[in-house]
Image (tube, rainbow, N blue to C red; front, side, top):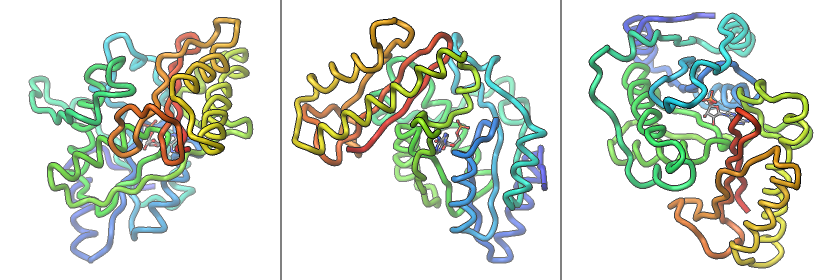
Length: 280
Ligand code: AMP
């Protein structure tokens, strides 16, 4: 597969494609690729002539106490997986090339970033918006494909695209799950056997909320309480960080769970932080 580590060579290739009137779709990732990422690549390939996958563990979006150092990295495997799936180029920039030591310009989205993961991950969406805009400038994609699993990330990017006039069409692909409902994530590899067995509680709680809200509008407080009981159980092995019942477009709290409402959760299993969501 065509692996490009320099910004200059990535830009040159993308511009060559554009000059030939080929459409380009970008799939930004942090690597440790799994079926969730592959589904994004398939979607990208169905919508554009050339697919670019970027692999970059973006330090800027990790907090000082988060898992940047522990984040799984396996580039050789990722490159082979991309080759197999017809990806035209894999962009693997270095930390040094992306961030000058005196880097001082950031993209700060001030609305969508504030709810859900915002309070527990200060600076996270600033890191996301900054790296995504940089990737847009380097690859100049017509389309960018993101996953519903990171629904708030997609909302922040959608708002940034609108507010900063990025000539990019955002496409969001559905969450890919294990057979037991656990959303695929590179972080799942960090779960112990016991934690892995408990992790599907997130999806079970979301499904419960979804079926309650589908049957009839339910008070959010009551639904949240039931979800918390499902996720935390009585063993204390899973700690809820938040349960968000919000408008799917504004990400602002909803007092009632009903059709179209977004229910999102974050929880910690030992060192591993997991997120998931469902639209009722
Ligand atoms: P990451 O490498 O975790 O930063 O994710 C890169 C992209 O893949 C993001 O747009 C994620 O939303 C998406 N993604 C991650 N996990 C899944 C999944 N289980 N299903 C669908 N998309 C996913």
